[in-house]
Image (cartoon, rainbow, N blue to C red; front, side, top):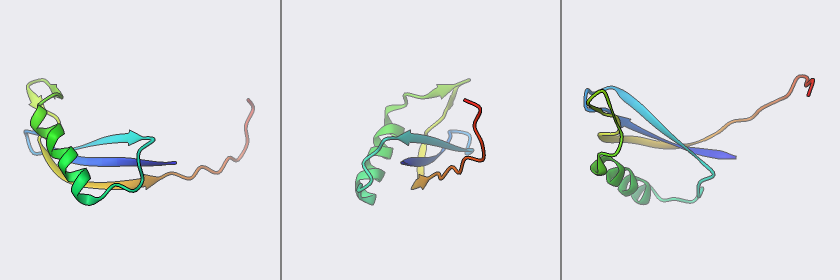
Length: 73
């Protein structure tokens, strides 16, 4: 399963990543950038007077592969 990582700059110019699981894997760059812009413009996410997702920077799909060694479940 892939996740979509959306990278933003905060209002104090630090990097912040929003990770989304179970996403459509055929999104175009234009669609993703437009969605990121809407997230940034909404000003929904703030902590200690810092807007966490202020400026869209990049987006990428990330696929994590796990290889179990052992399990005592």
